[in-house]
Image 1 (cartoon, rainbow, N blue to C red):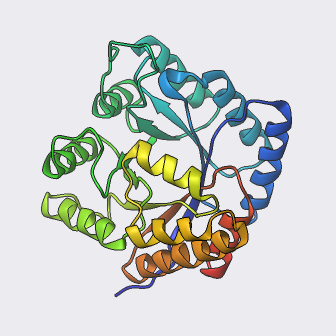
Image 2 (cartoon, rainbow, N blue to C red; image 1 turned 45 degrees about the horizontal axis):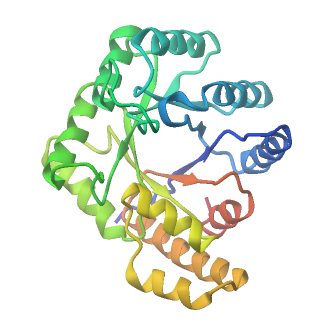
Image 3 (cartoon, helix red, strand yellow; image 1 turned 60 degrees about the vertical axis):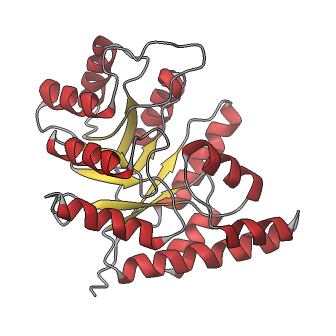
Length: 282
């Protein structure tokens, strides 16, 4: 097995207050010392955080040369709005995007002009050619709304064939689910050395938040992890140490299996992410 060191990247979400923004910028400065290949910035349901996302993207771009990859979603945005965003990002010199369907905002019924991430990838390529490096989402444990695992893999293959460069997985704690998905892509004609499958990593720092996230996005938390987290109750230090050990061993296994990159869902925090990256020697 190859043990080439994977690259790292981090995801941020836009904050709601000026104080939160200042804290986020300090977090960015700290994590930037780890030489990530980029930072991504999320975009709320139906573009609900659009202005805040743009503000954070502008601030991060002005602060450092490290590439920023804004999330761009198609639900709730018209083709004209998406085209405008693409032009704005091009003008800023941003050349990396995370293209997602996005969540349907509460109360919205229709899916919009571009109902799926596949449509969005096609639209970006039609509108801007090969200018953007496009990241898409992948689901080692199946998208919660997918008809079947086969259908889900087929959809990911279509996104690659439509022009996606890289896929980032939903977070997971079972390395075999990542390896199974990677093998399935290879069997379906996707060369994962050319079109990498990046492992999405969620550090464990807060049990109730983690369980809520996992339940809402269809990610599996193995029973032994749930059980142990429940047993720790409110002992935050024990949860952090246990969580570090679980995620460290997961990353170690993935590195030994040749994972090309680790994308940390940072939750806008420094310590758990920095500790893992440094301990892994990345």
